[in-house]
Image (cartoon, rainbow, N blue to C red; front, side, top):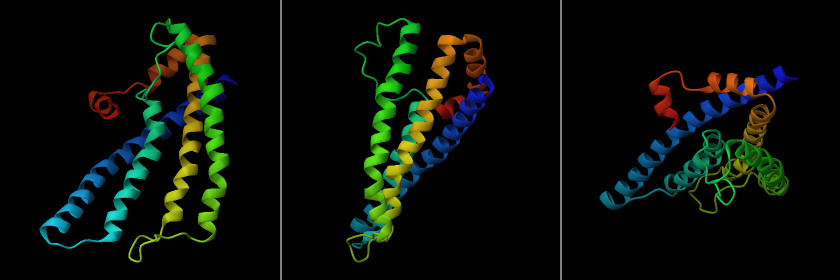
Length: 191
């Protein structure tokens, strides 16, 4: 069982890292497209609804696909009521129980409530309300389902790690050593 959980944790961790690094390039694309829209509008007195809508698509993609990477890197917003003054062991318990009782049910709810919304959009191949807008609103809305799936994988991975820290610390140390950046460039990329 330990081997299976270890393999899941490592697979999930690599998936989140690769996806997070890929999605990070979306921020550059977002800046470039936004600059292009501004230059076209104010420099050449022209514009494109599709180009303007693409900013929304890129922005949504970066955030919806980047959430799980942010959690993977422990860069998420944390409510410090109990956490700040807790011992290391208590922090692991807070993380484990918080994931079990708060994160997983919330993500399951988002999946459940979003399913009908997204499937209705796919059923009609929903497009932009603007005549010259992008015709892929249904694909954009699909992020509503992809985000909680990625987050559930990340939360389960965190729960596996927290469980190892609490009950099999030697395995947690091996996982921590395995998932640490191997050189300074990779470390800078994860910050």
